[in-house]
Length: 199
Image 1: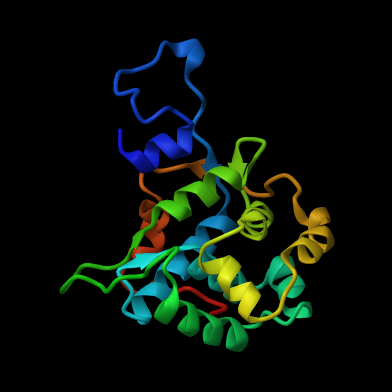
Image 2: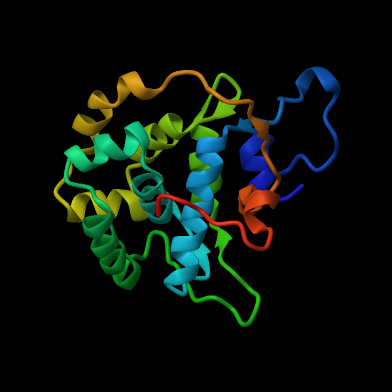
């Protein structure tokens, strides 16, 4: 087990032996919308030359994915342009969630530990949804997303109140959560010729 996997399944880091079946938590699943947000977050980090994608990249992924969450963010002033500018500022000055640099050819960004924490917090009814991602990002008191919202003068608590109705159950058949959040990039997305729309 990796530290990221431990965070996702809630096992204590010291537990390196399999737990008896009654004590195992089921691995959360990810709906298509949340998987797309993570893919867009990865792409944001990759295009910016960041070695790690974090909560700020997830916020950008939510904005670029469209849908109800993006509409709610846009109403609060968090658009692709404003969030992109805030990400540039945060990437240059953040100490809470540093982005690093992509390490060499073929080495794309990997998910930071904060992403694993957000994915675990975004789980509702055993599944990670886009509404759950927004809720978890808004609840975070520190990190890239919190710093970006502060730079844009957005009150996360007010935005969370406005988005409370969005946290419903997953619509599509969810997929098993991978051990490494970087693995959320679907095989279909990685195939040659596949593109992410709405970016």
